[in-house]
Length: 226
Image 1 (spheres, rainbow, N blue to C red):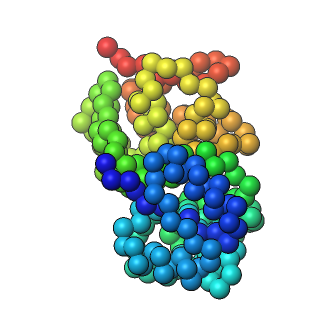
Image 2 (image 1 turned 30 degrees about the vertical axis):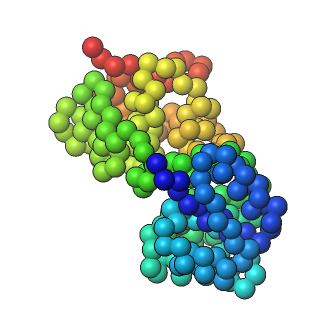
Image 3 (image 1 turned 90 degrees about the vertical axis):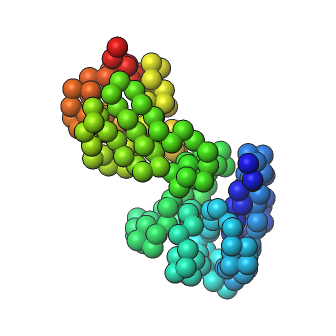
């Protein structure tokens, strides 16, 4: 399969090298830009970039300006990097069409995991497009869930959670493991957010919700009904 191109934009050369090394190790081609103007020149000159990792604070043109220019003509996935953890910045990013928002410092491994999750979601990485288990049918490309032929409307996180359960059916999953894989980052808040999402998911699944078993003191496991 052709190697996907990732554009990494950051005015710190050490940061670019760190991200590039992890991405190259995982089989990606990496292009680098040290400022906003260079980023736009590369992006519009290449035409086949699969994803952009974009720092907010940069000389010449900042990340917001670059994002605005890219979004005017392209729906390419964008991950914004910032040294600030301001909720207003994050909201602004999502309103502009940013796919993910990561605060510095961050784990390069987590960044790569998020990139892979986005590329799978946008159907650029090969993955099993359709999953099925005990009357549950998940079309990942269409983001659709059918249970016994009935369409089930799930939120984004509920959908990701169900996919993770089905892909790991029969395996006991701790709350920590679920958070790190479904939320795609090290989560330092209250792990009970998992319980809330599972409760809502079970409710929407009807009788099939009983397939998600609680493992007291640990987490959950999805068991296929024979």
